[in-house]
Every structure is written in structure tokens, then in C-alpha cells.
Length: 303
Image (tube, rainbow, N blue to C red; front, side):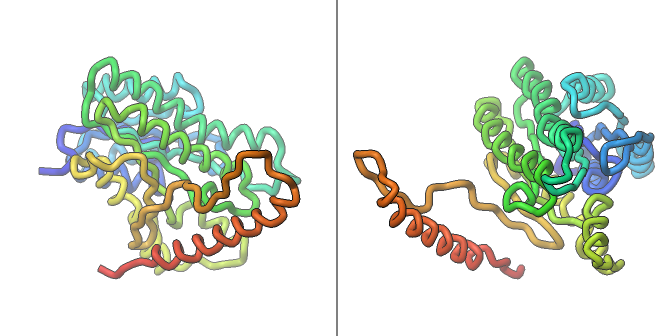
């Protein structure tokens, strides 16, 4: 018996990398899988039938799977994903919003097309796939469903040359918190992954900095380290966990702090600029102290 027996999972961007490993992991636990992937390049151009390869791989191991090549950047694509699940497996229980592209440039060189393309696949893509699924959950009283979204340290902390990607990933974190609130009454959890993994999207970034990626690093830092965490979040054991950001990479799993007011000052009148001259440095100092404490408390514990 697998932890996901009788569940139907739709995974976007599942033809390669993290998405593929999630599809394999969930299939191993008994889920029936819809493998979505356009089969394009990392910048979103081109297409291919790599989703079929993963479907064949799952079927070869005794699992059930179907492919889908719809674009996640349109609501019709999200509707197509749901329909593929219904046509092939009679329902849908799990959505993993993993599809993504990169068009890294500094703001000085990033044109409107680069911005729009990344926002469309990442941030809008999460909406386009989640909305039809959410409607299906409500209209059919489908309980025990799961949505796992993908943010990034680029969106949560910032990364040079990724204004489009970082903005999209930060937006996904906020989108996920709201979705968790809205779907709670239907027993659907919504959580966010902040992954760290060497994939075809991240390896070129290392190489561009003149860093070599060894075979050993691929073994210890590949997408296979993300898949078990996503699979667990989709299981019954994670029914009480929602609205969280989970970081996982190279054997590490951790929970990330949610936005909160660290220190504040209150007065009844408008703040003057002279008063802010004094108080703002105190707030920044409190923030720095909090960041330092968080780094210490977040140190990994060996198991």
C-alpha cells in the first residue's frame, strides 16, 4: 500500500528535473499521474513530447499515467489539465504547480517580453491551474485535496538578474497564503516549496559564473531531494499543514518564517521627518538582530 493510493495527481513541468522526480515519486506511492510539459527550452521557446517519455517510464514500473502538453499560462490550459485527469482517471486530488522558465537579465537589459513571459508561466500559471481545480473542489465537495506551489529563494531573498523571476516567485508565496485561507473550508491544503536543486535551469547559472558542476554534486544536490518532501505534503499525514513555505535541498528540509512585524513604534499624531531620523535606524537595527537570530535558530539539526 502506498501513501497516495487512489489519488490522482497533476504535475506541471513534469517532463524533466524536479517535476519528473515528483511524478515518479508520487507514482511509486500509488498515485495516478497526469504529466504536463510543453517540452520546450528553459526560456519557454520550442516544444517537444517529453511528457510521453515520463508516462512510459511510470507505466513501465506498473503505474498509471497520462500526458498533457497544454500551456499553463492560460486558464484554458489549466482546464485542460483537469479534463485530462477526469477523462483518464475520473477525478483529481493533487495539483503540483512546478512549471517554469527563465529569462535572466538585469533590469537594464530586460525587455517587456522577457518580463511578461516569466510572469505568465510562473505567477499567472499558478492561477491558471489552481482556479479550475479550486472550482472543481467546491462544486464536487472533493475533500482531502492538496496544492503544492513552487516559490524560490530568488523571490524570498532576491537574486541579481532575476527581477522577473523573483517578482513571480514572491507573488506565488503570497498567492499560496491566500489560497490556503480560501480552500481551508474544503479540507484542501496549500503549501509552497522553496527548492534548492541542480537542474537544467540552475546548472547554467553556475556555469555562467565559471563554476563547474561535478557528478558528485548532481548526486547530492539533484531534484531527487525535493520529490520526497512534495510527496509527503500531498499525503494524508500532512492534512494539518497548510499555508507554509518549506525549504528543501541536498538532504535539508526546513520551514521558513512568514512575514511579521518585528518591532514598531506608535504615536497619535503624524510622524515628523526628524522623528523618523531617530526611529528608522532603530527599526533597521531590530531587523538586523532578528535576521541574525533567525540564521542561528535555522541551523540544520543532524538526524
